[in-house]
Length: 123
Image 1 (tube, rainbow, N blue to C red):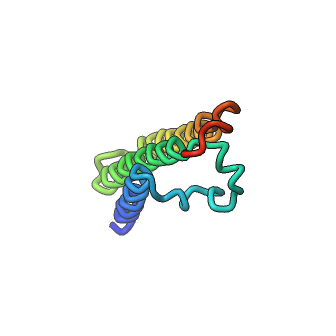
Image 2 (spheres, rainbow, N blue to C red):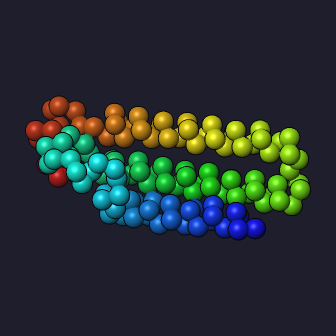
């Protein structure tokens, strides 16, 4: 039963991170943001980046709750062992697809256009 507690605790952590990102805080938790120079930071829309990280955190919460539901069904023997592997691969595929989508959007969609870099300093 301890295995069921882990997805719940992780979901709570990602929910708290997502709320922090939505409120405009927590940019210190974005990998590479603190170590990048000011010139590199000015190439990205900070608010867009924080919003995209919040969406990914909420996606991860939903994924973890799905994993927890799958574990509950498996422990209670409602989910046959043959279907457990299939649902595990479906969840893994969803996580990988979400991670790739987030990486692409954070690196491409949140980047400022060259004409915006010189005019906008507030993001």
